[in-house]
Amino acid sequence: MTESTSIILIGAGHVNLHIAAHAETLIERGARVLLIDPGLFWYSGMATGVLGGRYEAAEDQLNPQSLIEKSGGKFLQEKVTAVEPENRRVILSDGNQLAYDYLSINVGSRVKDEGFVGWPENTSVWPVKPIANLQKLRVLLENRFRAGEKPRLAVVGGGPTGVEAAANLKALGRRFGIDTPVALISKSERLLPAASGGAARSLHRKLTGNGLDLHYNTPIVGREDGSLLAEDGRRIESDYVVLATGLQAQSLVYACGLPTRSEDGLLVNAKLHSVGDSRIFAGGDCAAMEGYALPKLGVFGVRQAAFIHANLLASLKGSPLVDYKPQKNYLAILNLGDKTALATWGRFWWNGRSSMKLKDFIDQRFINRYRQMYRMEP
Image (cartoon, one colour):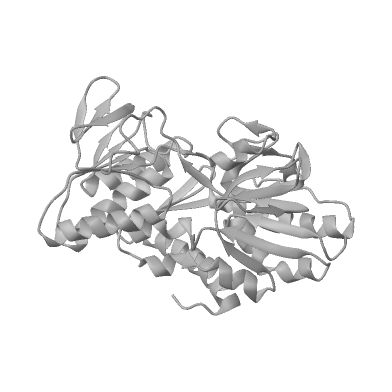
């Protein structure tokens, strides 16, 4: 490769943060590295803790511009609206076009609406992504709590994010001495369908004991006049709704003209590049890997990061690319808002303060590692 080799990183997710932090290794091989992102990185592992008041917004943020510039690369605060693989160029929201030799796409995901009528035009409905939504909702609710009000809250979605959001909404109210009603609504017959039955039962006892109102087998189809509309015709009254109905890849990856898989994202092989274009890599929530149905969790993007970085470097050297194999089991820890957490590892689980301490250790280590690279204070 020559000095004109251009590597563009689209999106500052887990994968591209890692590549940005190690951009000097690519630059040493003659590449120019540019990271394009609209703004700050919000760490998903602490997002519901921000909602519940455990962390301030600044504690959950990283500055991707400082990170890549520290490594010798460039940063552009913009949004990519299209990728043209046949021309090897990306189109920006301001109309400008940039040529590339290699891409790493890491634009994350958005919330599925699953036919949910009444959003996004309804300002009382708050999708869990973008993560900044949770900070905005927290500020809104804090103002109401300070006024002594008790808004009715509901979370749609009984997966990990929905559970954390509901528990932390309850915790936020109690910080102000307000026992605000919180409903957690799942279309499944229990919470955390992917976890063990024991973990789900323990979680049910924990949440009901903390005063949450749990609804099972209740698909929600819409929002109308201060109520959520269930598929069976029931109404669940709520002033504000958090939508945690699962995640799907961002629309950008479907506009590339490359193979995708349903809502999972750009189809990539074991090398983590597109099955239709070996110059376009993708990881995290916006990618779907051949032969696997990976959940959209940050633990996979974190591990994929080193492989995509290694394969970009191998591409510059003309060396063989390495294969990524997803881990079979992974640690997941849910912040329950009351200084306890539910930790799961495969079919094993444990609940308590020690789980929350472990989660805090892991989250702070992740954030601080990058901050130390560019000396950003929270």
